[in-house]
Image (cartoon, rainbow over all chains, first blue to last red; front, side, top):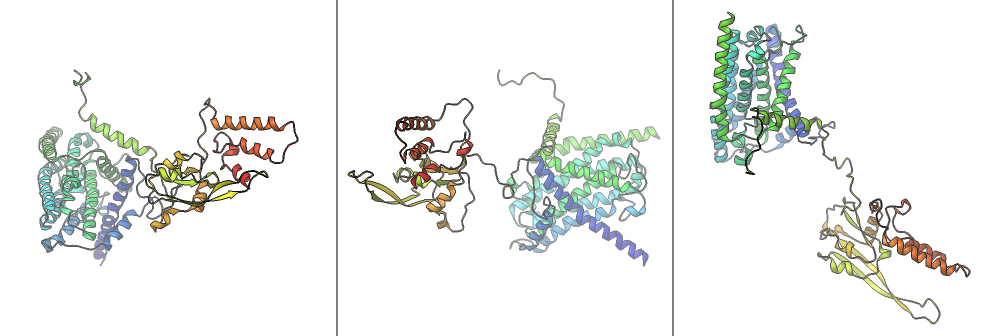
Length: 322
Length: 224
């Protein structure tokens, strides 16, 4: 009975985090982006500086008609948003925010493995949406998503492997237990590559070629309306939370901080994740979209060699300190 | 060659990217320029082309505004009245009386030509702009509404320091001096004082005098 309660509680907490954190990131994006462009952003919803804007958006989306195009592959089309969103919920389950058993949804021995594999599934949602919509813009978006996934999954995996090599384990809490502060400069190249590749996988600007609205309307999501469209948007923001959390855990030392080691570790995790999320928004506001060929070039000629170099460096240092 | 880049030290790779980040971050820390319009009224300059006010006491029904209007959106009706002679044995004078003055703001393109051509300063720009209607016919503002707008006309901006005195002021002062010189020796006639006072006041509101920031009321008083 106690075990059941424990599991239920953990699932509930993870679920609440999954529902709130993406909204917080989204609201922050509204406001930060606005102020970076000299605007105010939402000011009315909820009364105080538009804090309830995303709730209002959600209500609006829920009211809209759920249209499935006549030529669409109905079942796949309707399933795609769930496929895009749910993997991030699963990944969130495995991210430790503090030391010990109590601060992680589920300890998974092959944590890095699980997390990266499941995150890759999320992109499948876009592919399904692109193919099933029976729309040329959706198909183009889906193909671009596929190309982007192929290009950026590799450097992401390689840099994650570098951290796993350094720690000698693929368990996420295990990596954090082994973490030392000097890993930060040691793995910095890997961290940057991982973060950039993660951004590209989430199709965030400046890597939003698959949804480039000036060219292909909204890519794979062109035909979606109402709640299913909202789920795709939510998946993007859940992806930000997951990516920032993963980068924090793998490269920035998670719950380790200059002080407050006992009891306050989770604050460090959340703080680092929040700073990274801000960085994601900042990058979006600052840089223009990469062209498709530039996107591929960045992955294959810069990120992959860099991640290979990082692995080599990790191996050398690992051998030397033993 | 003009096209060749200026000789500079080798650029650090990624410095352009960093500069971009700095720009957005700096903008974020600055106060945003958004005007929160319905909550805060905009601070519009005095000559803003919001709506046209009619000061009908100045109107002589010369029809210049209606004729020059490119949109033909000014409607004027009038009739003539004869005024009995001022002195016994004099001639009767005829006078134009305004019956209707309306501007159709659904046609108006806010060019301001009517205001420019009015020789008697009867039309003025007002910065008021919140007069949207749900029925297009309500956008035809009749003379009472145009009169209401008149009270929202702000004083024109003050003249630059050291600027030439407006011609109206000089002319009015000259006329007043002349009248005063004429009427000083004999006993003051009942109307002379009033006329002199009217002449002293320019028809246009003057920005340099706080007393006259309101509308040119003197003519109105004089006509009574």
